[in-house]
Length: 94
Image (cartoon, rainbow, N blue to C red; front, side, top):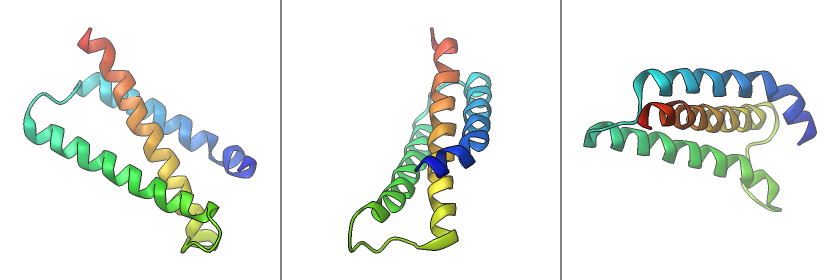
């Protein structure tokens, strides 16, 4: 996990900053359609995180090797992006 954090921090920081800029620019979704799309993206992030965490359980069907590392990195960066979107949209809401 330490290797993942040491390799991933630039991508996670970039995802957080890009998400904050996007959230500030776009704000929180107001209509029903964009809220459903945001919920679908959050569900995708949960599914990617679950696939990454499946490797922690013994006997699981985790993706091994380089492809598994890419899935874990994508899950972490997507979560940072979504957190940045929410954090960036909050000041405009207030």
